[in-house]
Length: 237
Image (cartoon, rainbow, N blue to C red; front, top):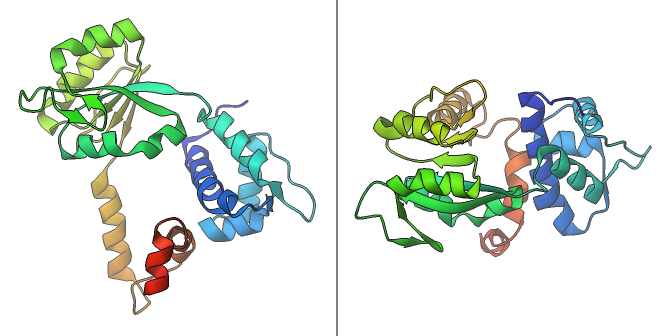
């Protein structure tokens, strides 16, 4: 398969989440590109093109088999495999990441967690005993772990990234507010909360509707409100 571009990967993740969390649980067998496009604010022709890139072919007047689409996207993105990772930083953000078990659905398994704070080392968080950072290199090499999640204070982010790279890590999911400098063979995925907040602030300041809701927002958020534990809350409102 041809290496997929970042924008295509981002859309495939959105398709998968929509199909796996909002369509499949309702026992729906097929879905059209038009419906997916309408729900996620993506042109249906782009949906078909993206699906074709992962080997999916729709059925005329029927659309795509939901289960087949989920399997194809999982295989293309690697969600059908398990990737062991280490977490660095057991503060509030790191603890929240440890407690968020939905990552397992996407193949991410946090095998161990580390911190430099002696008050955090030894604590149990969601089944993990926080380990001292000086034990990290041995664990990485002993277990062949090549993925790390970084949720530390900004001032130690780069030194720890250097340590991770030196220990054989080739992918870093960076939640710190700094851009990491890594060799070309290492992927550093930077999650910037400020970028998301900037998009929200921009939307609110330019919203045309009186309730602050603009195009492309209701389609993605409404299904979540109708599913799972939110259903009873919605019914009571």
